[in-house]
Amino acid sequence: MKITAIRHCKAEGQESNAPLTAEGEQQAKELAVFLEGQDFDCVISSPFKRAIDTIKPYAELNNRTIKVDERLAERILSIEDDPNWRDNLERTYKEEHLKFPGGESTFEAKQRITSLIYDLQAKSYKSVLIVTHGNLLSLMINLYDSSFGFKEWELLSNPDVFLIDALSKDVSKLWVS
Image 1 (cartoon, one colour):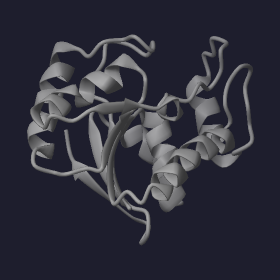
Image 2 (cartoon, one colour):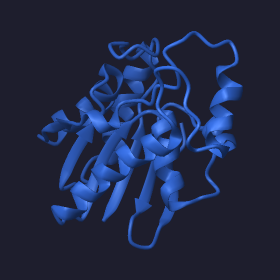
Image 3 (tube, helix red, strand yellow):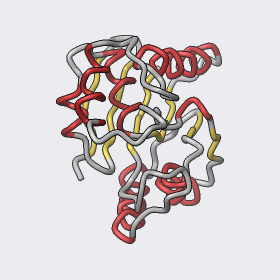
């Protein structure tokens, strides 16, 4: 199975209902053109508004339905305000079971995304399009390329598009914003 994995376009915030910025809306249109003509067995998005809005122009252009899956929601590091969140996030890449109050460990987030991938493989899909968020995308890539970690997460941009071949475990970047 080949997974085209997308980090959402530029958004106005981190809240689940944060809309795309004007630049993000333009990026979503450009992304739709970039993806035009590609045939995916299914298009799945995080339930967050910015993720759905990222892929909506593609779906409309290609008359595709967007399936929403909670397992693609962004990972919550902690429900507490943490001025050291960046350092703590980096720690979670090295300590996969490390968990902060109300948050999700790297291990748990990887189990969540693995569950989705197994479900897609069980349906014998050949090619899927997934729209998610930076941290979860980096953890998904890490499942196939163990060298992809915190430093690579820091280099992600909005949007980013990667092609993951689940069989060969090959990961390649398709879009540079």
